[in-house]
Image 1 (cartoon, rainbow, N blue to C red):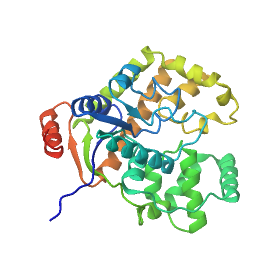
Image 2 (cartoon, rainbow, N blue to C red):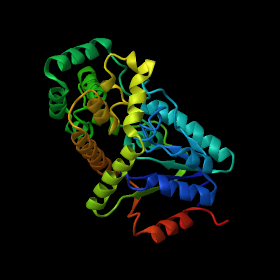
Image 3 (cartoon, rainbow, N blue to C red):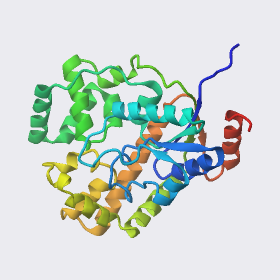
Length: 318
């Protein structure tokens, strides 16, 4: 039997606030790795505090890739991420370094590791019809419509995510098939790396919830609302007619902060809504991870010895 000659990579996955960043930094520093961010918020410039972006000191300690690649008023698709990430992985491996994928955006991982199914091109007429319908009855009603024709997609897409609701309905209206069926169909070429998939997730959900609340309070202390003030003041943001529809602003915490700065609710209401939204994100991430193949689960608080053993077995002896 021939040996698997593919280059190695490590994927550190898990729900938000589970300790992925700290662990990825530690592993990269120990084994000569470079981190490729797999996070749909960290691609945006200016989303630093509220997105828990690695600090300048952390980025100086270990090289990072795919941070700050778009302005917050710009779009960035999963297909674009996969192309950029593959180039980064090839470059890292070519220099004899170990690529470490770290993040919690399931669609990005899926696009990179498995490829994306072919989808119909956007149709301006269909999109205009969906937008008009949303203006008449609201995006939650369209989400309910999506749940009838594609329950699997509706379960993954939040009611406050108009871009993905619109795309899922657009695909269904163009093809007559649920977008989830197309996504589960034959995909493009798989990533030509041998990947160790590690999931960091506290076994006790209450521990994760406490970590989420504590981290958000630290973000507030670090000036998160000032950061959102600065984002709102950018000319590029002020030129957008509906900033709350932007993927960057829909990131958990940012949407709630934007609405609070628009005068919605009290500071206490804002904090509770942001923490609740982050918990909902973590729940969706865990649901996706449970459906992933070839992943190994670890509690970051109690399984460090098992994590180190998994790494030692995967990596060649030095």
